Image (cartoon, rainbow, N blue to C red; front, top):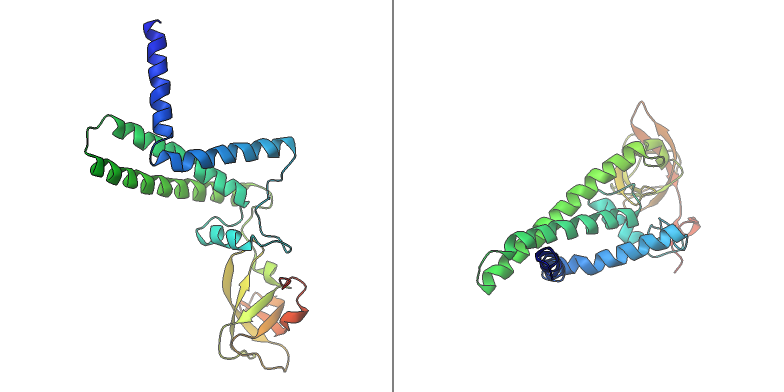
Length: 224
């Protein structure tokens, strides 16, 4: 065996040791799943929006969770893939830096936890930046318009809604929620917790006109 071959084998051994050690191993197995998923996407077996919220599925909570951390408007599978890939690379780099440090086991574990935390932060930052680019430059990735709320169902969050006062919470198509100013168009009382239908937007007053709407009539409500 030549010296070059020995160095290559040593390098590969160190790589696998770091990839399968703490904390990189937490992301290594997830990365394998991600690679397998995208292989299936390329083959046409799965779609890019496999994990996105759908009216007939129970994955809306995952979409809402991604939106809550600033990753709205991007397919969940894309956001997760970016986060896992960046977290794996960051944790692998951190583990490689610590590999040559002679520390006691407790200190090594503590530093591994620090590397894990930094990897997660780096993953979120990279995914957030990617989501910003996605929403700005890709078709369908535009910033949501307030007019998109027209025709959606909202929930009253103030004690009442009248012709001069009221607020309600509405869920956008990407799963994010917003508190909007609303005004009543009908005579039926709308109080806190009431369901209303957004029928129009007043750009001058920056509020929405709503009318009473019963939840059981909502075609998009989850089936029990």
